[in-house]
Image (tube, rainbow, N blue to C red):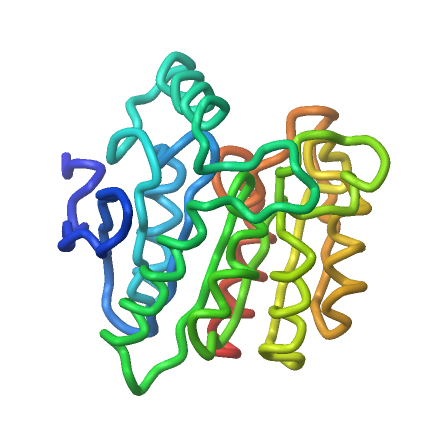
Length: 245
């Protein structure tokens, strides 16, 4: 039986303040898939493989944990603990962009340099859902997918409408590509990513397509493309990327 990571290539680390691993799979239209708070899980690997099978070259930065994360609750909880203790992620702030996005912008520029004649797609999920709206400042992105943005973790007041970026970065993103295709989605019953958060993306980026997916029983359904995968959501993302890349 083939290994879970068969077909993936380990790439040289992109320069930055710290060394982070970067992997890729597939050939064709380039996109960057940024993993969730639980790390590069089996479901994330399977999503990257699906994207490759659909004609994309999927780049997978590893922000923490192993590649792939071992199965089981323990490794996932260790990944979450790492994020909570790390200064690279602003989990509670409604008006600060996480420092890790500086490296992710470097990755975005590097990927764009590898594909000078092609547009680059960006997919952020959960912890990194809102990060792609900053990463797009590094290039003329072709399409951006925002899946269930989770930070800030505070879920009261204006935090429900924040998606983890500074006001300056939101303004820069609005000015950078006013007509950039953006797809934002979450499960309708997701209590970690509140409805108001996606509605705010629709307000800040009026051309964005915002989707609230019907899902499983509260509070289980959260990870639209991975752990709680919606086949409908995956197909919508694929169609969106193929249309714009």
